[in-house]
Every structure is written in C-alpha cells, then in structure tokens.
Length: 409
Image (cartoon, rainbow, N blue to C red; front, side, top):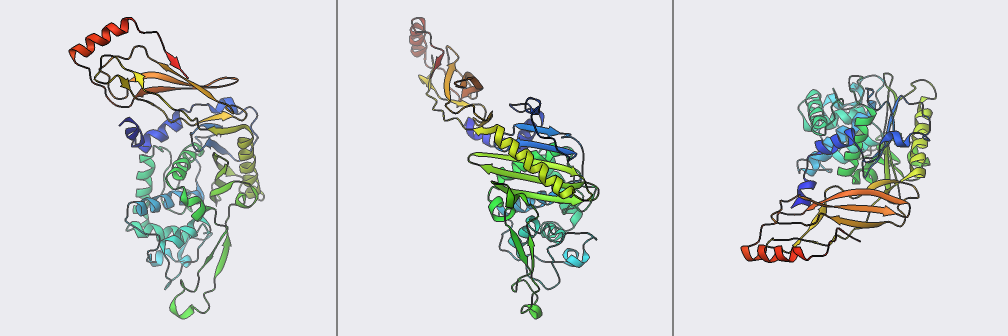
C-alpha cells in the first residue's frame, strides 16, 4: 500500500528533505526574529520540519554534552530492538568510574561496587549530564568507547547528517562536531522516535544518586546521595518546555537543544556557541527563551482534517480509484491563519485505467478566508487494472456524455 511504503522510507530521505528544502523558507520569516548572541542557531517546527529561523546553520561547532542525545538515541534504539532493558543491571568497568573521567567532567558519580540499571544511567545522562554515565552506556553496547563512537557515526550517516561526527559519547572532546541545522534535524527525529523520553528523562527536575540500592554493600547505610538539578533552566521558567539538553566545553561555549509544546504545536531550537565567559550560560538561555517565544507568537502547526472520496475511474475493473496525499498533511502556518480552513479536490479528468500505484491523479487545495494555504499532490493508493473489452467499450461511450468535473469540496 502506498501509505505504508511512505511510512517505511528511510530516515535519510526525511533528514535530507529537511536539510535541503522545507515548505516555508527561513528567509521569509527572519525579518522580525529576535537577535541572539549564540554563534549558530536553528529553529524548526517539530511536526513539519519547517525552518523558521537560522543563524549560521552550517557552522561546525563541538556539540559538547548535546552529544549525549545521540548516545541516548543509540540506547533507546537497542531497547526498542529487544537487545536491552531499562531495568537491566549495567556493568561498571573502571573506565566508567567518576574518578577516572577527564578533569572538568560533569558526573553522575559512578563508582566501584555500585549497582546501576539502564534507566538510572539514562537519567544520569539527561539530568546530571554525567560523562561517567556516557562511558558506562557506551561500554554496555560496544567493546570500547571508540567502537561506540563508530556506532554513533554510522547512525549519523544513516540519518543524512553529513557534517556531524563523534569521537566519544559524552561530549567532552572538542573533536565531536555538529552544526545547528543538522542537530535540529537530529532532534526532530529523536523526538519523533522517542517521545516518551521527554517526560521520563529530559524534563525530570532532578536526579539523586547513588541511593542505598546503588551503593556497595558496606556503604548502604550512608550512600552519600548527591542531588543534581536538571541543567535546563527553561524547564522551570518557560511554559511548555520539556527538553532536551544543555552542553558546555571551552571550545564551543554554551550550547542547548530545546523543545517546547503548547496546544498542538511543538518547536525545536538548537543554539550553539554562546559566549564561554561570565554570563554566557544566561545569554544562551535568554536566546532560547526569545526564539521559542517568538515562534509561539508567530506560528502554529496546522493539521487539516480531510476526507477524500474515491475518484471516478474509467475503463478499469473498478469504477472508483482511492486517492491519498503524496505528502504528510500537517504544515506550518503564520499565527492567525487557517482558523477556519476549507479544502477542494482537483481531479485529473479523465482518470483512465490502467493506472499504477502512486499515479498523480489530482491535487488537494487547502485554503482559509484569506486565500490558498497549501497544495498537496494526490496519488492512487494502489494499482488499478484495465477492465475487459465490453467494460472499456461501455465506459468509452459514457465518457463522451459525461459532465466535466475537475474539483469538489
């Protein structure tokens, strides 16, 4: 079936479409956008991929701890495939202990003798931004950190991210590289594939570790629990924010991948390279808040409700052809548009069998009181075979006297 084939298209094609062309160009929407201090940024509609704002979207900058989102994506992928479980106990080799992480690392505070499950490691990645948690997760799924980085890079290539590359899973290395445009595309796919991660991990206000159940046997009565607050401050002061991740190393400055949802609209913003000196973190958060506020003020996601009737088919075994949209129907509109939408269907006249599956048979035109909003190609849902001799002859005669009709509400 055509719809099922569309659903099974590779993620590479989706990301390439996002990176190359969207239904609304960024240039059309940048005139009244707020100024930001971050060196690079991309703001998109999470549902449609429409680019609403860009600043140096192709500038290569180390993602810092945003890298952990790709690490989490690999873990979620393994869980979905049945090769791992959130409740499984994860080994903690010495490479994963907090004491063995590079200077300046953010930590979950893993240590020898502890027991930790995969769910806790993911919270340590999302909330505490633990570099030790990243190493532990990597070594659960690969024999060495460099091998896990290879998995991350293979996944980036599969997603169509050509500039993004990783050398390790935590983000501590300046040799990890991404761009705002590519990372926004990745975040869109991440949220699409793992929507439950937002409430379960990324919006958690804090994470306490180790608990008595984690501590080694001799210290369970005094586990020295450390409570760390989520480093994404917009979770606490921006309505609708529920993810995703912050990051910082000297070589990149302050980075953030943000997402927020209000009513039926979700936006994703990636900001890279806010100043690394005093005030840089506040500047980054201000940039994110201003971009998301501007997006919610000026745009929304429209999801048209459309009922498509079968189209008349001539000289076929069937008298009717079922049509489906060739593209997803949701699209981004300026705020205030599409409040009372209407649609018409323009059918190619006549439709004559045989027709292949996916044949362009018409156009869906969506409008509001101000004019046309979008045109969507309509294609045949399946192949339609030619009818028998008498059916073709009879329809040929009927076609001579048919009323001309190319559109309907």
